[in-house]
Length: 288
Image (cartoon, helix red, strand yellow):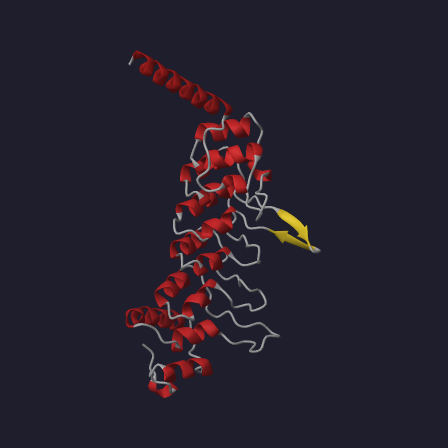
C-alpha cells in the first residue's frame, strides 16, 4: 500500500513540475479559436493572451518583448492582431490591447496581381458583430467610422448586410460615419437610408432622417436615370407592413415639412403594388 502511495505521489509531483515548467515558458495555454493556424512565435502568444483576456501577458508581450500588434498580421487573410479578440469575443482582451496602444485602424496592404489590396481591419469585423460593445470600444480609441472594407464598401453596409445590425448602424452614425456617403460610389444614392426605404423599413428610415440622412440625393449625371430621387419615391409610394405605416407617415410628413414634393410613381413600385394587390393608381393612393 505504501509503495502504491509513493508511486502516485511521485507521478503527481512530476505532473506538477511539468505544469510549472510549461507555465514558466508561456506554452501552457492553447487557443480555442485556432490561433496557431494564423500566427506563430510571439504573435501567437499575444493572440492567445488577447483571446483569453490575459491583461498581464498582453502588457508584458507588448512592452517587454516588443511585439508590435500594429505590424502583426495573420499569415492568411491579413487579419490584424487587434481583431483577434473579436473572433474570440473577449472584450477584455480587446480593451487590454487598445490600452497598451494598439491601433484600431491597423490593416495589412499587399500588392497582388498589380493591384493594392487593403485587407479588412478590426473596424470591419466589429461592424458585422451582434455585440456593439466591440465597435464602441474601437471607436472610443480612435477607430475610423468611415473605414471601407477590402471590397471598398462602407462599414454601414457591413452592419446592414450582416443581419441588420441596427445598433452598429446607430453607433457608427453617432460617432461620425458619413450618413450620406454612397457605398457604391458610382450610384451616388447608394446610402444607408436607401437600403431601408427600399425595403419599407420606415421605422429605421425615420431615425436616419432625424440624424442627418438626405433623402433628396439624386442619381448622378451619366447614370441611367439622372436626377431621380429614389428615396423620396420610396417614402411616398413604397409598400410596407401595417406596423410600419405610422413610420411611413412620419417620413412623409418629414418630407412635406421640407417642401420635398411627391414625385410620379416609378414603374417598378407600380408593378410591386399590383403584384401584392395594393392600389396602383396614383389617384387612389392618398398621403398617409
